[in-house]
Image 1 (cartoon, protein in one colour):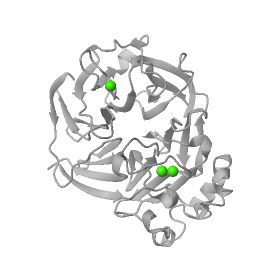
Image 2 (image 1 turned 90 degrees about the vertical axis):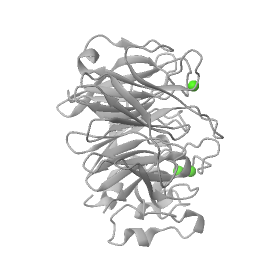
Image 3 (image 1 turned 135 degrees about the horizontal axis):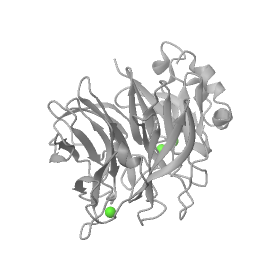
Image 4 (image 1 turned 30 degrees about the vertical axis):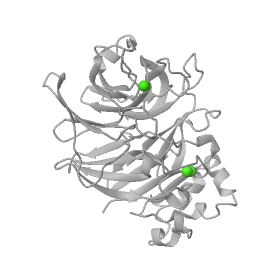
Length: 380
Ligand SMILES: [Ca+2]
Ligand SMILES: [Ca+2]
Ligand SMILES: [Ca+2]
């Protein structure tokens, strides 16, 4: 971020809405790094908007046409791709954006809609070993009938091209991570006969994805199912399960449950099949809801979005202890305060956070409201 203010202005039409929004005149000046004391200078005055823990800062403000930022992926060229499923108001089409030193610009705006729902809904995304970009799609809010997909964006000479379906018939495809030539995908609604609180991690090899599209068999232990989980539904009434997904320095996978906050560790055999799945016992703090997460494999610390409590938690996977990196109360997100964080990306010493801002029952966040924001936290 050499010149964040210039970046904001270069954001052009995306940012026109916020710049003309007189009710939030401070936004244009709250980009990170505008002065050495940005954080201190731009903490909003109202007591209920002061961060209780940590110093999240405003990275970007998005307009109404980009109302629900979500997935984050690091591109081979160092830029960051952001998915915007617009689930809070999907009268606006879902798009992918690119964050570069030049600002936040459209990356792909013609995402193919699912034929029956007539919506696209990109969530988490990741570049594969083939250089193409893969994104999970969440059609669950449009249809409970297993309409979600795994999509591939063909990337040629660094530019996105054709988008194709590689796997369909997920319930709620959510997070993706590539490890070697295998992509792992969480399905937060992989229900089974007799278990409507089910979720799963599924896995696919690049070689499989390069054949004909794969059609999953809903409500079965499809051969692509690696591990299954059951959500314990609490006062939020949310039964979504496995959500954020990443792996540690030993190649063990971790996923967290959105509905009940359980953190699961999945260990693989050398042939990639399931060796063991465990529910970890965390100390220091119990996390009631886990959305996106990322693991720093240099330290084996997991950075976890606690969506329900407007917090980013750090779990030391060496001893399963939890500390809170940032947390604040109900907010509209102005100034970069956490507004229901959904996804995190670590790049260097910066933690990028997308503020999903689409509350469920009994969440700290009570309203989906402008400004629509992305936050950033500088890790020392
Ligand atoms: Ca269910
Ligand atoms: Ca907001
Ligand atoms: Ca809000």
